[in-house]
Image (cartoon, rainbow, N blue to C red; front, side):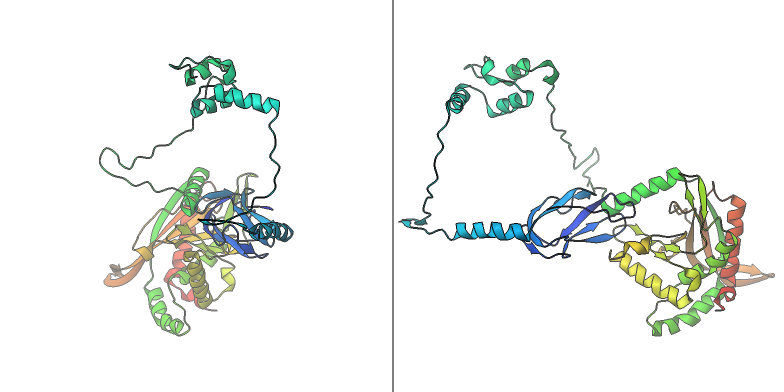
Length: 420
């Protein structure tokens, strides 16, 4: 059977063969993993739909396969036994003739066909025609009978120009292969060409789609998270004993829920086809994860129903799966709002791209210790920077500012959401 690359959902149209786990001639069982295919979402294991023997691998490792394109040919069991029997019979032929170089396979009594008069005539004419193989190939492509052409070459041979002149008018133009020359240097020195494929290609396409589909604006502010730092320092040791690494991200997610509930336009997606704003009554927060292959956004479902330590555990689990490219596709869909933590890499402000069709993305900057004047006194406080990118078609600037103000209120006084 011709096994075609299946539709794995999520609108995926192609994938790159990361690794073939079988080779031609291998016997495979039903549901045995044949290959690992990298899509724009994750690396997917492709199982065999039937048991049989691998007859032909149609798409080499490292190449892109389209949905519906044959990726491998599998001979099913019935066909295998039949073919195997013939091969075994052939292998068991007796060798009766012995010479200096060893045994010679005994020839089978196979009748030699006698060429017909027409075949003899055609062969004779073919041998009498003086033309190079390349000229014969062009003649075949143009539908020209070489026996009708008088060669203009030095010894009467037919040239390429002779064939082109004899070709029908509509076939005069010969299509040449489009040879692409990739230079390893430019005017200034040597360069390296890195193919844009796999996850990086998908990211590029998604970024362009987001920029083309949204009216992107970024609102920036900062908040005093001194009390939050104190709580996190106090709780992180307890979490470590339970094997959980407590970062600031779970606190931010908790602070987002009441703000999103108060400003429903921020917790929405846009349906450009029907011109609808879809307000979500649940809170699924995507977290941008930096991996070696590129940015992946796992989604934590129903964050309003989870405790802080549960969020910390899930963030760690999903981030690890994303970096290992073992994350399930279900864990990468259903988002209503996205958080991008540039602060973990030392960044302060940014303009995060919206994860379309969502309408907002909150960028977190690093927490810095700064001198701050409070009630006329100079104090040292911990300050976090925030960058809210939003689709101005859906959210007005004033609404974005009010939303971020509510997030800041809860970050500056985390006791508001830590009472569980």
